[in-house]
Length: 462
Image 1 (cartoon, rainbow, N blue to C red):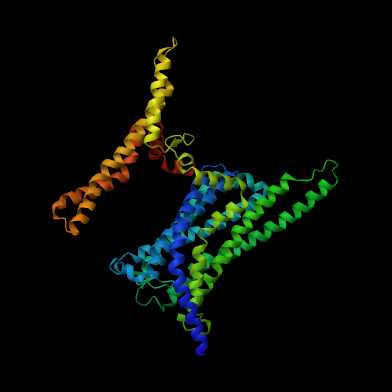
Image 2 (tube, helix red, strand yellow; image 1 turned 135 degrees about the vertical axis):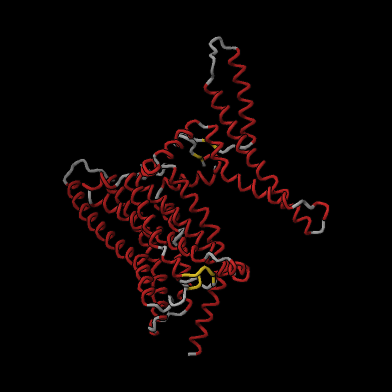
């Protein structure tokens, strides 16, 4: 018995040491990976249907929120507890719990909605034209998000605002009586039943039905092609089906495998607290559950890269040429405004002078030059955004540097307190000035903004 305890503590200690490296590395990888996935998929050049793209972008965005709220704001502070003791004095843990669980639920259920969409597309041809559309995907994703945000409000009343920095399913303080209350136990079991219990069952069921339909359809197609004298060695339709089913099964299987241990550990711990001591699992099982569950937040990108050739190509372009490939939508979505620096501004000025000289020699010179007008707008937008950033951040930077120098003994560089306040005010102001700049300089952006203000629900859903 003593040797078993020693082995358990050795495993637990090893996992704790592993987590100190694993969690920061996972955060450093997961944030840019999910951000790049959102960018690549949003461009719509991966050869996927628009509704599929909507689901995959939503899944990546939800995973990114889980990485921020769970991995960065929960697991890393717990792992490096001594460096985050200030959190004991920040009474927002119950709000954090609501956001974390809402993001986690959305991440899980977006996978279910994607699985159902592919089931309909493959197995229900009559329903496919109505359901598998971009608009339906937006409505489904929006509905799921709202429902699970409302559902997780109960965590606000289950938890207190105090952080306890303990790696258990309840990382906050628990309200009096809730820990052993049968009512709260029932609510919590319902929570874990909905996420990820029911998704497990739905995904396995939908995948089984999809496999059955594909096998039956494939046999029928082979028989038809067998009777044809024009049979070619390859079948594009079968190839497309193979790619679809590989993507679907790998995403679903990845979800089930990485979430299974977490579900078992949290349910057994809750049962143990209710008096069922025979269901107790060692602490290292719980730690392994957290490690695998968080790993699921960045594996989908690897899955896309392994199964989708066009996704790999677009991802390579974004990695190689981030400033050229990365684009932003100002006004019309089809218009690309490349991120530019001072070299691009210089190029515009040189090209503009050359164009003027050419037009001066032309007898057909018109009153207006569309190309020159577009260049003028581009350089105005570039300089206004850049100077706005520099002006609003300059005072904040000066104050931070001067305060640090003052603490190191350079009393001559001390600045009054009001400079600090002005610096913070201007720095925070920079967070909302870009919208004003776009509205001033971009006509199409103003038109789209008016539409969003006048008809918000129509524009969002549409």
